[in-house]
Length: 268
Image (cartoon, rainbow, N blue to C red; front, side, top):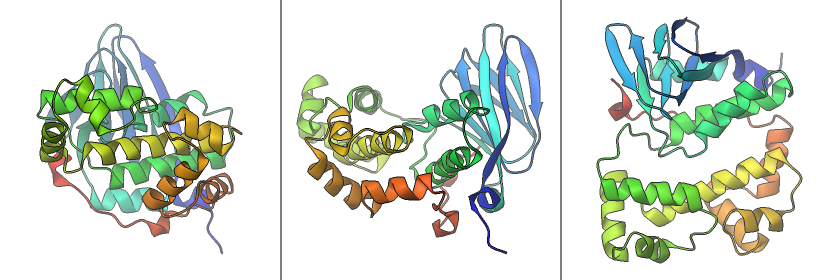
């Protein structure tokens, strides 16, 4: 019998918890949470993890989260064939600030807030994108350089307006060569590549969330036009924007294409 995307990965058990309380979450698959406001403490096995606002908790088994007064935690479980495959190779728990996955926060919010109002296929596609993000992004819990953290923050906030590394360096009042050297030292990629990846992630979101023309999407994400957007998209993803959109909307993005590579630095 043929398998569909729902067999590979699907979302379930969304939560949106507010106020001072302790919640325990124990499901097979990927349990993922966003600390939406205030800080909290997560307990996993014999570990106690302090988690700050905006950080994301991931675990493969039972986890308890203590929410403080005024705090809010949202999350859900991802299950299915690919979720189990991912968990088998990543058993544990970690916290990431999402620096190398700039749209992970929005994807988590999107699933929780739209869980009952969109199709199961649409939720499955977002869940698969999240698994790909957790798998392929260069995940780090800490950026050890204030300069690099500032550069990343500027890129994430202004990716549609920053026209290149030179302008980014000017905004930080440093030389382009110094920025490139420091960025690569702490992240393993250049600021130009990081900027390009953030823009392509934004393009992916706009492609599947609306009916904007490619030229309109290009202008909203920092590209000079649809031709340049298509070239950049193909270079980074290996396919055209419309091919990507068609696969996602038709639930043809099958996760058996994925090759898991795990960075042990993210684990506690």
